[in-house]
Image (cartoon, rainbow, N blue to C red):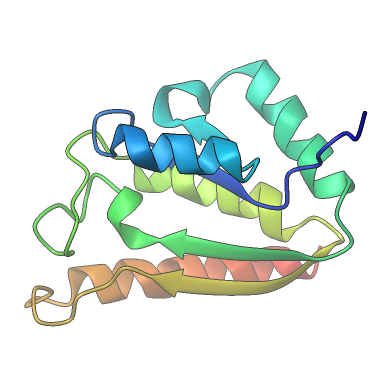
Length: 135
């Protein structure tokens, strides 16, 4: 019997914001995913750390539409999205890991970001990543 180690991990996905087909596809490809309401559990922290420890290289991507503060400023808003503080906490944990080599931001729609709120928040996250990558 071959044990399948997940190659992807998704944190903060919303059960009602995604289709059954998406979850089935994630299961088919052995994607390790965590619903938004699971992120404060001790089990999540242990599983995330284990995931990071079992991979030589980690590429971290922040999809800005996971945040609750950017609703209406992105193409796919999350009404029950994560707080900026929770995302900052997760980013700090992920980018301070010795195997993290990359960080990117996606899901930003400049045509909807009329007051540059999403871009400013993204800049804060980039700063957090830079400051926590060297610890």
